[in-house]
Amino acid sequence: MSATTVLPVGFASADLFRWLETATPDELDELPFGLVAMTHDGIVERYNLAEARLSGLTPERVIGRNFFTAVAPCTNNFMVAYRFESEPELDAVVDYVFTFRLAPMKVRLRLLQHLAARHMYLVVEKRD
Amino acid sequence: MDGGPAAAYEELLEFLYLTPVGIIKFRPDGKIAMANPVAAQLLMPLSGDGDLSDLYALLAAVAPDLRACVEQFRPAAGQICEERRLVVRSIRKILTLTINKINTEILMAVVRDITRTVEQEIRIFDDQQRFRAIFDNIRDYAIYTVSLDGRVEEWNRTLSRIGGWEPADVTGAPISIFFPPDRAGQPQSTALLEHALQHGSAEFEGWRVRKDGSRFWGDSAATILPDHEDKATGFVIITRDLTERKLREDGLVAQATTDPLTGALNRRAGEARLDDVFARLQRSGQTFAVLMIDCDHFKAVNDRWGHSGGDKVLVSLVEICRDRLRDGDAVIRWGGEEFVLLLPNTSSDNALMVAERLRQSVEAARIEYNGNTIPVTISIGVGTADKADVRADQVVQRADEAVYRAKHAGRNKVAE
Image (tube, rainbow over all chains, first blue to last red; front, side, top):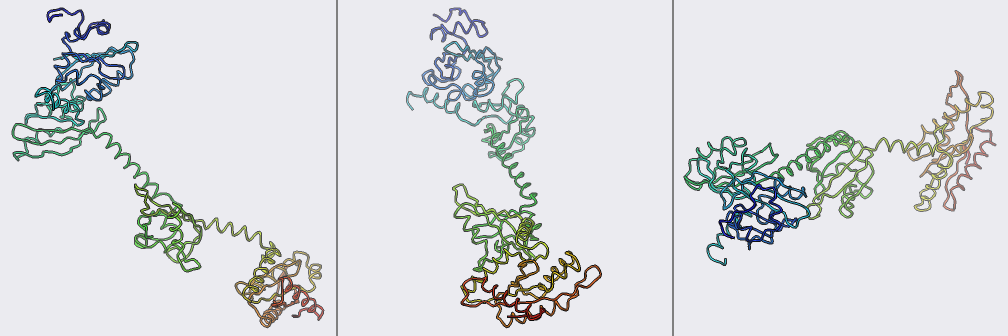
């Protein structure tokens, strides 16, 4: 895929979850927003290019770790980690602030989880 | 670090991402230049809209004077505040803020969440207050802590209520002041503390001493106070005043051992007392005497004055005996109108003298009954213990034979 390809999904798409389930790593890297795919117990399995650029952390460093305790402890709270833990069926948008490269940045998070699926997803988009 | 500058940069970023305290770099006008994730996490609840650009605006509700503190800080560099507590009521959190001025452009802040520590402090404080209240207000238990060498450290008001002790008498004093000495002359507290040291706790019942020297019957439980390594650092002792219970129990003992009409020992208790003095005779040669007393013509008294008149005579006889007796002597109601006086440590001559005085006292007594005086005399037989005796009742037997002779000699007599 080239950079000019028009992707079939966006941050707010209703069918984002379904698309993510079948997307290839290359396709995930094409996304203009950050994406973290985790197992249901928080172990990172995919960390796309946009997210790596935002955070300054490479996928090699992050994959295999627990996202909430060993990558982004600032999400280990009732607004993010607790919702994944307590809501087996989850599709919610949360306004948040990340400090990518130590600069506070307002972001919008979309939390996606279906118990039957293999992954749960944290989707990160910059907001004004 | 491997992988050159890019990898080193990533390593540092990760280090800051994972740092478990909030770190903020800001300018004197409050603008936040850099913040790590924990800083953002702690400050976000303070911002209405997730705007983390201005530290002063973020902390306006909890530290409104922050800008002034920074502006009025004159030194070129140094600590502006250290571990200042910020109470964020909206989210029930307590943060601390430390700010260092680096130069005229750069300030560094550290933010920590100490909510749990404070909650723990509050719990400990509450526990202490609760303990204090119990300690001070428990009315029937004197509680005091004691050092390893047996000196009073802290104590509650009950000690003054049940013992009359005041702070100046007690603090730093050896606890032996509360305990009378035992037979060996040692304060009973020494044994109490030794036992507690060996077994963790000990409970002794016995007489305790009030400040005025009077005694009360108490129960004292000592428990060792261990430090964090389980080594004894002292004791806590709890003393209850059980005098009323003791008196009640002693009353029960009295009921079981005395004759209800006259208050003299009953025959069973009297025989036990005889056995005691006989055992002492065998052990240490300490002799004793027995007076067998029989009321003369008691049947005639009953016939003339009725049974309650007879009872009045018996009660009066015991009273007269008691008036003449020493501590340690015993009056025993042996049967109907027969009494035994047990006189420990008494020779035959002395016993005869006691008996003769007693006989005279009864003869001279005016026993009033329903406005009349009942004339009464007694016959007394004296028996003295002999080293050849093998049983106590041999002495009683001799006294019994002697009283028979006294009666035979015309009554109102003493015989041996």
